[in-house]
Length: 535
Image 1 (cartoon, rainbow, N blue to C red):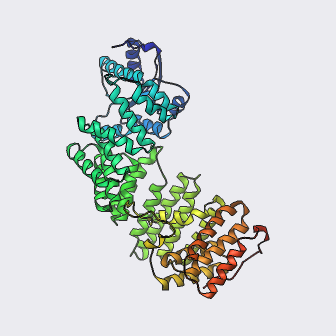
Image 2 (spheres, rainbow, N blue to C red):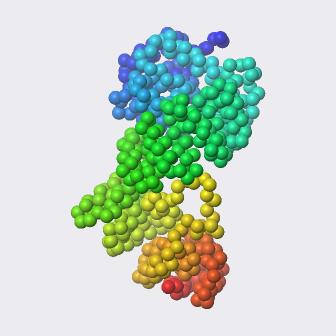
């Protein structure tokens, strides 16, 4: 084995215990390490990692720390501070299954369970250093964001007899997946899986199959892997995606529940469980998952507003049928939850917009049309100021859990097939369209746009609603020159949707009128309404 020049390696030692830092630093110096920087664990450590080159980072995880080593590693990965040329060793005093599984998910290079001997530490560091030295040219290309050059090096750098050759091939497979070359990655993982039945290669093979649309093969392989290795936690997440793509939301929910039960510390898994449980109307399960994601996010960089918004929407759905005091208590609870989200994510205008849209629906469900209209007015102002008018309907669908499940067999939606998933209630559509006209005449264009959109949702053959939407977006393009382009895109979209439908004479005249106006310079358009809305 070639000699390792410990004195040339830069080491960062992080632990909340001063005694532990002193002990481990003495061990390292006894082995010959001379460039060791020791720090207590805190958020500012990330600034040091970002600004300094290290070869090895020894990170202590103590279960009673407010800011733990696992959280620091999770945040470093989230912020892109994990460099391929640096080895991370997690030193944990917590050997519980929950923490060990979470440690595996945040992917340190090695895990040392405290207390450990100097000989054990030396053995692990030697192994890391030798592997890193052999693969360094590949990892430097990865760090320089040159994946194609790294892929070539994986084949040419080492002879097949080198003990690190197989590791280089695994890196190649992962790089091919990262660059969406799944057809080239699949045979690599397939070869190594069937040669040694390594569960990691089996998992990567199943992921390739899923990405390539081979859902049955991916499902069968993942079920096999979990049958013999039930602690392969990421496989539950992937299997849930496979089942959802196949249209089986019940099985997707069950797999996410199993994964979350075995390893409950991952925010994204809780969010996914909540999302799927909402689709299956298992609102109690969805509520529990979203509450868990909020709790996990208290000291995590991966905290997201969706945890609060989705929980608020679940509470809205649970409010159905409530009366009197129970209804008022539910509304107050939802309002407080959304206020918490807006405080925590105060710089995100989408959170403010989504909160107003959700509260508008809450009040509408409660029969309070006046307060619902007020929330919609607020949403319109927020969207206008933040340049989110074009995304308003999409944000509304997302926050109200109206976005469809991710079913792979269904054709991708286009404007030509959009109507397939929409309702068909011409009577309701006409009624909602008239409400939109009344809102427009009352000087509430934002609400009018929403009602015209709802009219189209109820009946995608409602030409009048589409032309009314076209008029309002053309007027909006005229009135806000800074956002004229995005609003003209919406105008053109609704005109295209209307054009494919049969017109009566009044609708035909309206279409031609709007089409002619769209060819005129915005500054030349008349002020105020540019035509009469169609009822």
